[in-house]
Image (tube, rainbow, N blue to C red):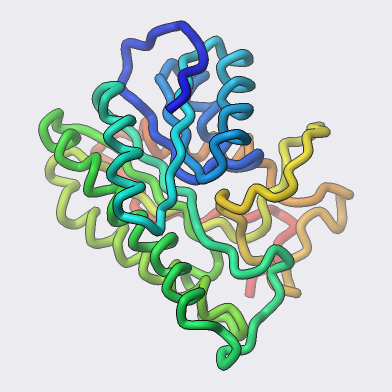
Length: 269
């Protein structure tokens, strides 16, 4: 675990699992900006530490970089031992998934190795299950907490050639619904954010973001053309992160359980 920043926060901890240079980074930065101590978790600790340094510098916040392999139960347990040592985890954002291909090309069902399929399920669903188990007891004790899961088009529709992604995302959506019904009476807000489209880098950013496979990326079908009319590629992660914050601060008399986000340039299908 690497600690960056020196300012202390009177609020709880916001833990963001699955942090790369786009959505995960933007969500972490938003919560840091709002006064939270932030723990960011991903597999590549070197890259993660650079993100932590950037957020801590920009927001003058305390940011902890913690390595995690969401497909490994021991790794999740050890990572959250570090997170929980920081204090009460008030917010959990689960943004991790396993990409079968960096090019997002369909894979014939008969060509998918069972190990690859199992790992995708482990990261998309079992990892979310394990992380939620780590933080829910503390949330029950405090009578409050927010758990946000990142979904995508594959959470709703089976897509030919994307069995690994779809099955994991279907399971994650079911987990979100089950946790909502079990724990909303304890003051825990669980929401599932369906992102229809591809999340790009923040507007005007020149940062490089190659190889950050631990962050949520969303499936873009041939019918979706983000930015084709405006010259802008992908959904702005900073704008998407504002929605995650909005879900966290909702009054409990009107909680959202599932929310659908898409660019105005996305075609419905």
